[in-house]
Length: 389
Image 1 (cartoon, rainbow, N blue to C red):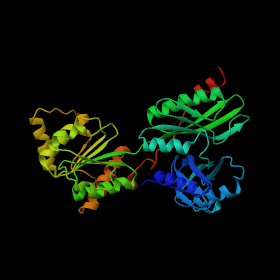
Image 2 (spheres, helix red, strand yellow):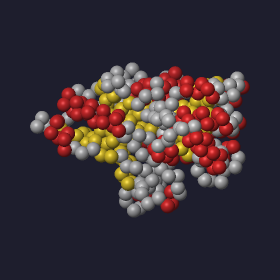
Image 3 (cartoon, one colour):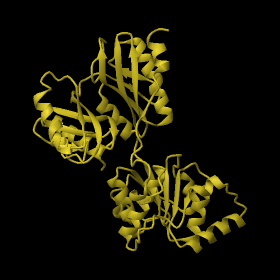
Image 4 (cartoon, rainbow, N blue to C red):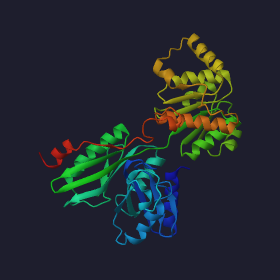
């Protein structure tokens, strides 16, 4: 279970217990911060906190705001500015030289625009979505902090924002974020003020397909589920014992090598091949390299992988450079792994690195910032739209 899945579970429990629940979301950061925009934490009136928005230094203070500053249930934004050299002036001991803005809102499951329910739908129906939330208002505008717009993958919209011109511009930018699959912070100039919005891409779980159901595949499935990924195990030996061995898997497919084409592979899929059977691996690799997935990892020594590719080429199977670039074999990053658990850690770390477009090197050798900053969209075109020019 990942962080957001735990938040959803905790919210359900809070409603069953009749507790008031609050959601804290990092909506904007500047400089060095522990968490990026989109990090969330659920809080209840009984003091339960699930999720993190920092390294543990801001959570208690944010919770206090739910008790002292939210009696009317209106959303608020709290800014933590730690750019001063003396970290102690804030008393938080942040250790990061940056600015964090946190939106805190009361959760009402009966709200007509229920962003938590929307996020749940994206998670469990395995589709992308957009949540655009107003978090900064300057001037006299008829928009509230916390007002939001939800964009479904089919193009339908749900919003509590009344300003039609602003809404139309926001819809355009939400579609752009959905296409690019990248969250942004946008600033809009309205006739009587400015509005800043966090346009967040809600991503479904990463689909991981593990070909092979041996004991060494178990920790791979466990680690993937810890990250909240959607795990499918394909057993080419078609053994019913696989169900008992992989209770954590979301899906188990018992199939012979001749019928592996029934396995769903998309452009988001990461595939790990660890069947320990040469003939199975040939058929699986043939299918995967010709598919649109992002990652193909194959367990085995380098000589074995070279032989597999040679046999595939001998069968007149042609692979482009792009197809071979997604092949990672031998699989995993070099951490000196030997035990099944260590190897699984190396495998999952490599998949995560590929999906994040990173090279899995030491952070101390990284010249760029650890986290990519949220891109702030240009406001020039939006000025023309919202001012009616």
